Length: 341
Ligand code: DOR
Ligand code: ZN
Image 1: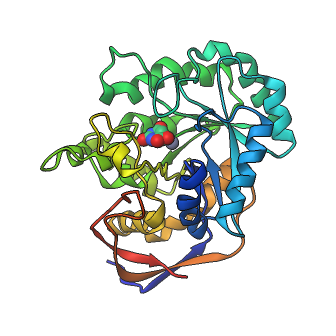
Image 2: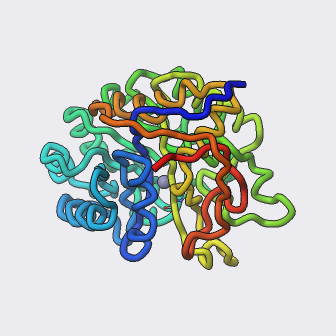
């Protein structure tokens, strides 16, 4: 194994993050801004971000707490009555970078999501013409489908027809968790890419039940069995430009996680790059971390690469059990790299 003491890479971006709002925003945004130059900010607030005005105001609230040198890339939450002119106008004005498709009731704050892709055909056609990216939460919501099968079902039932109907639309299948999704993206058209979270690289579904119920490992899409984790790992470290970093960092207060009906979401922002570095090192692929973290996403979105670098130093990092009112990913564990500075 390579035992280099430091690893310097081009400054990375996070192509999928939940920064929340209010006190939680102020508490969590600096952790993302410390590591990442830019981030695709999810719009699932209450109420969701559906207008240019709401996105502009949210962007200002983020910048007020993130510190200098961080660029939030805003997304528009798609609803059944989303307005193509508002969305493409916001894209052309530089406010929206992408839209987010949540199937209604698929996950946290998705009640206003899309009930049928057919309802947003005019929006998707306008996005396709404008060159705007569609970010997709890829799970069917049919209660008859087993929760562990909802991503794989989505590929055939929803994503394949969508790609056929809008062949030039750029689509990011967010937070992939299955061998089926990894293969679907790898074999799909160049307009299709995927983000991958740290937790789906580190954990399989046994982690949800290790010695008892583990609410801090619960996120959506839920962790899958080991063969899926290995397939997603292979996709992440394989060097393909179709796979890139998206943490899906999703903080919830400890009481909302440790509950009779706990919220879905893993807060991985504090040690995100360290967590990915551990995976790439275990796979003997540290030299490919830079592509995954700092190049593939920007190229897919058609944005420039960042200037500047970050350095990871080989050092034992003890991850705290709590940061404020939130439990971080890897709580109580040790990681082998630290982002310097
Ligand atoms: O685990 C998740 N948490 N998955 C999502 O899709 C949403 C997110 C959140 O907003 O908490
Ligand atoms: Zn998310």
